[in-house]
Length: 71
Image (tube, rainbow, N blue to C red; front, side):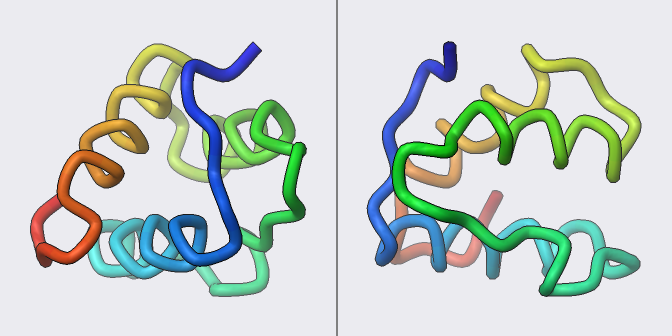
């Protein structure tokens, strides 16, 4: 189970930050549906070739400052 909860607004901000950090990702690969946090983590793990702990840490870091540009 994911250690975070996303809303459509926060999901869009996390998506933008991931696209800035990982420029080779296509925006359609990071689509999000409310309540599907685990599927998002699994998809990102596959796309960026990192483990679950890293992906969840990165998403939580993005959520800590949703208005900022840093990830």
